[in-house]
Image (cartoon, rainbow, N blue to C red; front, side, top):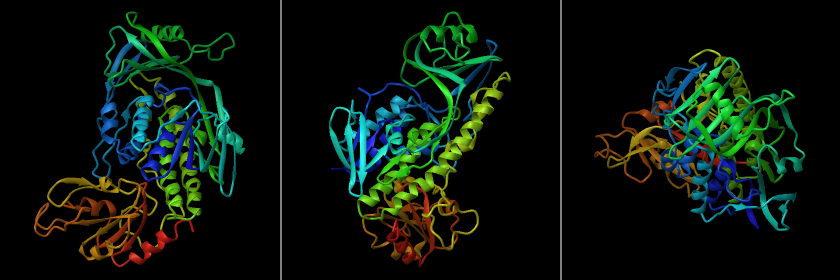
Amino acid sequence: MTAVLIVGAGPTGLTLACSLARQGVTVRVIDKSPGHQRISRGKALNARSLEVLADLGLGERIAAAGRTGLVFRKYFAGEHVSDTDPSADVVPSPEARYQVPLSIPQWRTEELLRERLAEYGVTVETGAELARFGQDEHGVRADLADGRLITAGYLVGCDGARSTVRRQLGVAFEGSTDEDQAMFCGDVEVEGDLDPTVWHQWFDQDGAVLLCPFEDTPVWQFQATPELGPDGRPAPPTLEGFQRLFDRYARMPGVRLRDATWLSTWRANVRLAESFRAGRVFLAGDAAHVHPFAGGLGMNTGIQDAWNLGWKLAGVLAGQAGDGLLDSYQEERLPVAAAALDLSTGALAKVMEAVRVPGVGVEAVATPDLRGLGIHYRWSRLAGEGPQAPGDGPRPGDRAPDAPGHRPGGGPVRLYDLFAGGRFTLLGFGPTVRAALAGWGPAVRTVAVDAAQDGPGGAGAPQGPDVLLDTDGQARRAYGITEDALVLVRPDHHLALVAPADGGARIRAYLAGLGR
């Protein structure tokens, strides 16, 4: 019997599979598609998703495959109006390595996640369609359409907006679809003189066409106001229709679109599952929430669902937490998904109005909220109680800040480098807590955060593999720590609790009580 069966091999399912496999959980991933999709779909990873993927060991690979600082070239009524880089004014922060989104086609993100998953010995099973499933107190029985049977401890439906898992659970998918508010979308190649280093956006009073290039691929993502059929509704998307729309709005007769490998119509769809858990079965990603296309929150919210659920499943399966920990998945992620739906719905309305002004493009929705760095779970049962750090430091449930520092010997290191790996991290600020960092076992990584006495690696610097020399005091400022203290960080980079230097017993009690 496998521990976790994941239905759906998009970014959500693959992120969850990598998180579990890395922690030694036996996992199977099935997908009904006969082969791996090569569709651009969600084309941007936000800052929080980049942190997640970096923790999974994909930071450099993802960065090399995508593009930041993409220039938006805007036209109105066929005339070039302006070039802007929405990330140009973003101020770097020591508390977050990533600040701007990465432009990358979804198929490439999935490819890199599959490669990472294969390094743990797990391969996606394509052409494997879930027909039905049942569950009891011992596990889940899943019957595939080809007659195969899979038994598992838990099942997670990451199988999209038309989720078989959600429908069979009978979970309501509440919301609305506006059939009249739609957009053509597809993957095409471009023949002719069109700069492949910028995102071209042609607007007019009655519609728009956008062509977004991708790094190291001839494919561009095409987006446009749809053509209408005789009934006044969007007509089926075709390459010929894409070309007609391009000619109408771009007014560049020397440019031809060809080799369409994806043709789709996106409709304004806003839906949220009424629950994310039913016994041993969970919903994540588009199976749990569907977003309007503005703001690019759909794929990113799904990746972050998986990140939240993965460490909890692993902890329960390892006997380190009780089943109640799994209830915190819905408790934390359902409100976040609802807020993301409100944000993306508002973003869609905002951008539809804004682009009527010459020189304004889709950057009209680029707000700090879209980075995902402000997501918190302060209301959660996992937000530890008790005295907190003074001033403006983060509260339990908040995203734990990153911070730069040095290792003993002088090499640079960041807190998020030390967090990586799927374990709780106990930060000890100051020399008086060094003894409190001993004896925690393999489930908790301990990190001494100390000021270097004589510079990095100097005579007064602490030694050890998990040490961050807070040379410039960035970590203390980020966490609001003025006295020596202990800070417990969850495996998903959220703050569990803050305790005084002698608060080791509080932290042990917190960990012992997880889900129990």
